[in-house]
Length: 264
Ligand code: NAD
Image 1 (cartoon, rainbow, N blue to C red):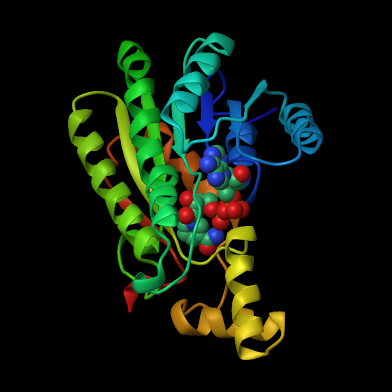
Image 2: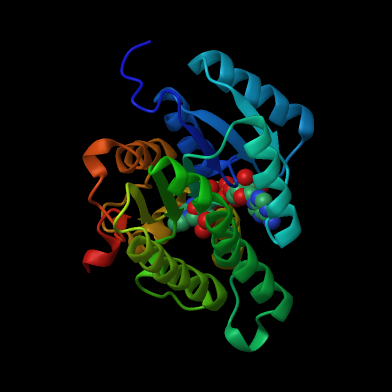
């Protein structure tokens, strides 16, 4: 196996049983990193997925099903991961959920869940991972924010607030680690065709009485000038780059990969 710059490193990717997290997990494993996989789904399917990644990339994989809306489960995830490997060198805070509704009818429990999963969980994983990273004087924290961490869209109050918060958290961590070989950056995808976006496409198709293809075209036309979805593989490659030695002095960045969404 050639070109495995992350060989010997261990990476936690939260929410990696699906979508972007799974794409990032594949890319990190391809670069040689052992993995802690986290997220929901059918346990047998997750076990098969872990075996496939482990075999394909010859890395060790550990799965933990922590619900990241509960601080004590995050604690358990971090302790179990450190027991399995000696510590976590790379933490990718990716898990996230969405809910779309005007603020007057936005369910308060959805607000709480979005803030907990999309923002607070990154605070907990980071505070628990940093002592080991500081001991090694090496670490990479990559927060999967969104273009919605940079600009807003109507009906996404909790998501936009959480993602703006995540970019703020990223900058603070970058400052607190600036004089070490630990870096913290955010990546800000535009639309990526994952189950999270498919739900929005289904709602749009039903509301406008249009096909799935038409819903895709109209969603992209509204926001993403390239007209293309960003892919999990592209985001995986960006994450591997941010984990590389070449990215050592990229600190506190909010790096958009969005088909020119925020260039407008
Ligand atoms: P997805 O629904 O495909 O995957 C979400 C993952 O998070 C799954 O593995 C799921 O099991 C896990 N998850 C959800 N709630 C959890 C919880 N309480 N505890 C642990 N794991 C949990 O979604 P995705 O589109 O791949 O989104 C991943 C991240 O990328 C999110 O943070 C999302 O906000 C962000 N993002 C997505 C897009 C997009 O267009 N899809 C764009 C920008 C940013």
